[in-house]
Amino acid sequence: MSVSASALPFDDIRNLVRQLPGPDPQAMAKARAREAQLTKPGGSLGRLEEIAEWLASWQGRHPAMVLQPQVAIFAANHGVTQRGVSAFPASVTQQMVENFAAGGAAINQLCKAAGAGLKIFDLALDIPTPDICEAAAMSEADCAATIAFGMEAVAGGGDLLCIGEMGIGNTTVAAAVCCSLFGGKAEDWVGQGTGVDAEGLARKAAAVQAAMEFHKGHLSDPLEILRRVGGREIAAMAGAIIAARVQHIPVLLDGFVVGAAAAVLHQLQPGSLDHCLAAHVSAEAAHGRLLERIGKKPLLDLNMRLGEGSGAALAISIIRAAAVTHAGMATFEQAGVSGPGG
Image (cartoon, rainbow, N blue to C red; front, side):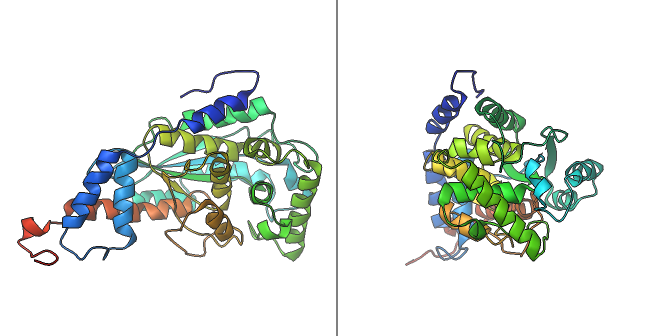
């Protein structure tokens, strides 16, 4: 699953994404067959029925189980923060990573509630990527290596992977990624992020627009967009999504920044996100628009905009409930209950 060195590192990524495995047809068929025999009207559990089939299909086993959910948070810093695009200074990224390690953040409590493991990955926090308004965030080699790091980071990642991030300024780079991938105005893709005021929001839009102008003519390829206007955590999260697919681990996507990483893969290869569900739609204005573009219907809408994998961690209980209900219910025959038409 490693990415080999070559003159064109992105070629290795493209080849890998084109060869991603599909769902397990036998597990899918078994899930559908059992679902039809459970003691309830067909479709009466709504999306829980779809989730049970999705989980079995991508875990490659029936019945599917959620016994070892994992949350992976990727943290990075961004040079664009010098433009006043965040309500918090860049130093908060490192401080919050330390808070995660000490168990004091929201995500720590949500992981406890969900029975999930938590891993934090520091992506050179002391060396922010350059300001995307003036330079590319990464070279092609560095971006490919960061994608590869994300792939290796989630090796042995349990049976359900939740992907999150931490990085002051990263809603700005996520907006730049989305604007590059899908078009529109900078204002269409920026939001409050950490809670900027109207002036801060205007600075974010101006930064995204400046990045678009600086990199004009180089934004037609998804991986080139990622390296030019993205960030290390976005590249690593894209790698984690790829690795989970290879390892038959279903994925819960958290918020807007995670969605931007997923969108790069979506634009690179149709179907590359079939093993992913959107855990929630955040209060970040553009997240709902992004989910529509990548064809994902969120499981939750709780007006959250924290990041940290928080929405994904909350959604673990829904996925687990779908699996337990599907596996534990009696069939019509077992319960001695007449089925449809019987």
